Length: 430
Image 1 (cartoon, rainbow, N blue to C red):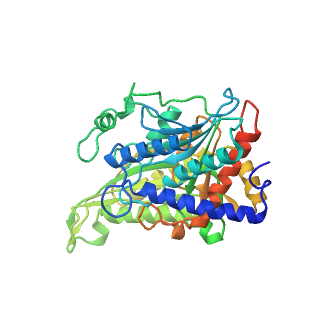
Image 2 (cartoon, rainbow, N blue to C red; image 1 turned 90 degrees about the vertical axis):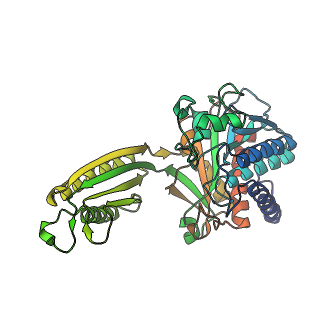
Image 3 (cartoon, one colour; image 1 turned 135 degrees about the vertical axis):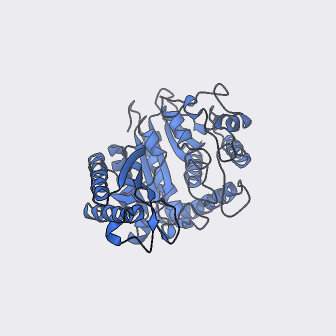
């Protein structure tokens, strides 16, 4: 028996109203831990980040949970289960933000985790299986050229050796910043864990699919894989007025032709695949000179590893042909690779069932953005669920999700945690 079966419709409505107030208050409180300027700026190991994590530690302890830090600054709040030998369920998200971000990205998952555990403890007492809320130290990669530090450290995908030499735009090294906040190797309990039974992350969609379809929850099938490339073209800089069109080796024109090829083929292969040219540089970059050099980035994403591989094999060959036909030199370098991360099938089925039984409109969908759940899925069964984002806006002060939509997500999370924590006694989850 869970939240739905213990409540009438009017009781559930009353709970949703209370959850609206709780999540709004929590997000307003957490957004105050920010550097000056528009929106919320809370970068890894900054003074604002440290204040936020210390305040969350105190809040979790004040809720009666066993609150603790690990050596990279992740904060946990533990609701101990009656059978400590069972692997715990962990839920939460990341506390860091982009520069001038919104108040929902990452923070909502933390708020939801805290509110859900508080409700479950107050309503049902101790669970059979331990439940944990987590405020992960970093996901965005906004300060240092490395992302998923919090979840990656837990999953063994990040290490202290891997951040040596990294520095921010002010020249402060990763290690200096970490030590200034009191963290680092040997500063506390190890970040790496192997005891987690499942991880569940609740997040705003950061897109417009749910809003456009009038749905309240997205159950994520997979987080897309990503490949990023740098393309360099070499031609010949020459006079814009005296060089005939047929005699030009125009690197910028070649880049434009390749972008058109990229878009056309991406559209042909279907909606799941997206390909983006995000940065373009030309030299000498003056109005009256044919460009002698050009470079641009290509970002390709798909949830199917085979389709991703096929497209990333196709476009360099097509670009090379386009370059050779124009007398241009061509280089293509892959500089980032993240494989698709499928979420756990059984947890997805459980979430589908929860939404159906609660009468909440939902759909399966793919996440085009990266999330901490993709790190955890390498360690344990993991699930990711979305609530709508107004206008699809995110990573900006204007990002917004209504109080009712936020509360609905918390309700779904709470019901799932009840079923996993209070009903399940099996050694293996889900």
